Length: 117
Image (cartoon, rainbow, N blue to C red; front, side, top):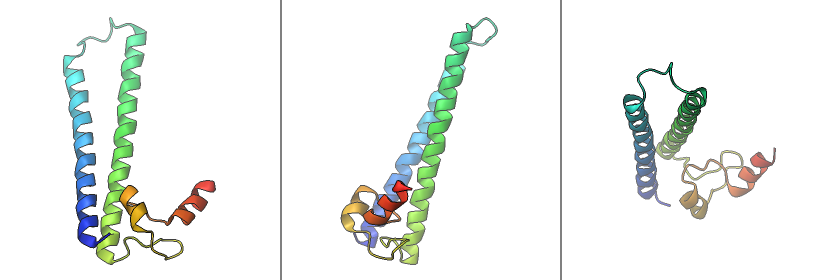
């Protein structure tokens, strides 16, 4: 994969992730504004459901922010000239893998070894 195509793909992914975070924030805000003003008369199960949904959304946002960090790290590797090179063995990662996982830091073999731990 050439550098221009890789950069374009990574930038698009970063924007997609940011849009998802933005949309989750808007959904949460709309739910809060449209929700009940007084939670004292709310059934405990409803309050528990709302708490669960907020925690779920926070976990999703955290995961999306982590993915953005991975994209930014891949862009930095691109600038440094190390994008597409396995951080463990130094061999090329391969265009097929980078097409599927554009933020890949390891070749298939080394990624498999990391996941087996």
